[in-house]
Length: 152
Image 1 (tube, helix red, strand yellow):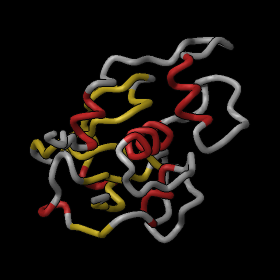
Image 2 (cartoon, rainbow, N blue to C red):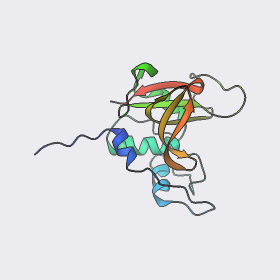
Image 3 (cartoon, helix red, strand yellow):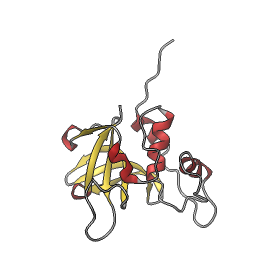
Image 4 (cartoon, helix red, strand yellow):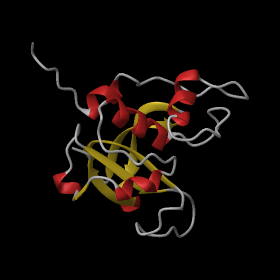
């Protein structure tokens, strides 16, 4: 029997279009992602980008952060440069928020994480969760990149 091999990126693509539900009701699929590692979320109004990456990694038995903190992914996998990044293999981690944000050594700070989808000019394309409250491909400025990690 032939073994099927699916990359994290290919699996993550299957979730494109999943959206959070406004108000106190939650999308049960997103709530499952959040509760994979934390029992406290009551709905999908909390940041869930790391939950999405953890969920995909869990499904594929890849290393994962087991944390809802986006920057927790800076401690997982092998460090690679943006020039070496490949869709299907790599996760990208970004600073988030206004003003001066701490660098990659600070894990407990605002951030965003998703699967590397490519580069267009000064933008990094990211396949991720909680991007406009859905799973989508969105651009992020190279200037806010904290790191790239290879999971496999």
